[in-house]
Image 1: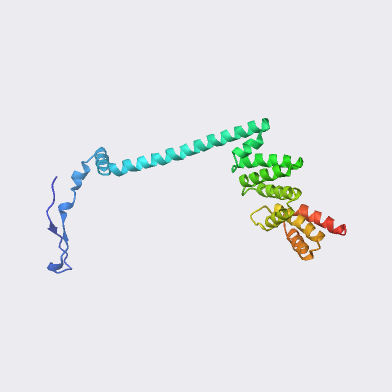
Image 2: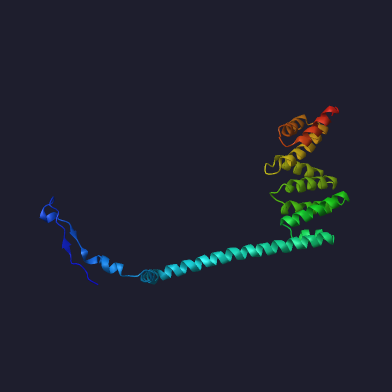
Amino acid sequence: MHRPKKNKIHNPTLPDDQQDVVDERHLVDARESEEISFEDRIRIYWSENKGFISGSIFVLALVIIGFNGMRILQSQAEAKVQAAYAEAKAADTLDAFAQANAGSELGGLAALSVADAAYEAADFERAINFYTIASGGLEDSILEGRALIGQAFARFYNGQEADALAQLVDIAANASLAEATRAEAAYHLAIEADLAGRSDDFDRYTAQIENSELAGQWQQRLAMYQQQGR
């Protein structure tokens, strides 16, 4: 390939000792550059960058495989748990399913069903245990408060009145729970405070219920209680 020599380009506006020097030895002859085919250009680029390109493709492939693999495994695991839940419900073994899947949403739903049945049967100790499992599996869902309310009442009827009232206080103050759940706890606390002659507590819980936009049911029940002369 012909390499041009180092030449000076004369600028008449500048003195001779300040003329720019252009080194043309590193310039590619345009005619010779045009003679390089597209395929040759690709081959040269690949040869110079094949390590980087191969590494990038390999990493991308691993990411895609890993993502799809995790999604498939997760879908299979969820389908397996759902099938086991259906089988346990049909076989009336939701209690075993709930214990085996404690911490999962389906385990929480199973535990809630078992706890409700135990509560209805006045087996409050069993109800407490399964409401506890239910609240753990249903954490951050709208049913979490439902499980906590059930647990508090099971404790109350199991002779643990102080623990039950303390739990209702926590529920009423827990801003992460559903507003209706907090209003329900506040309603029962208001009635208990009124019966115990604690007017300040009654007024406080009454205000919480009346100021709630999602406590319509408990506002109505509270109004009925007050109309009956307390």
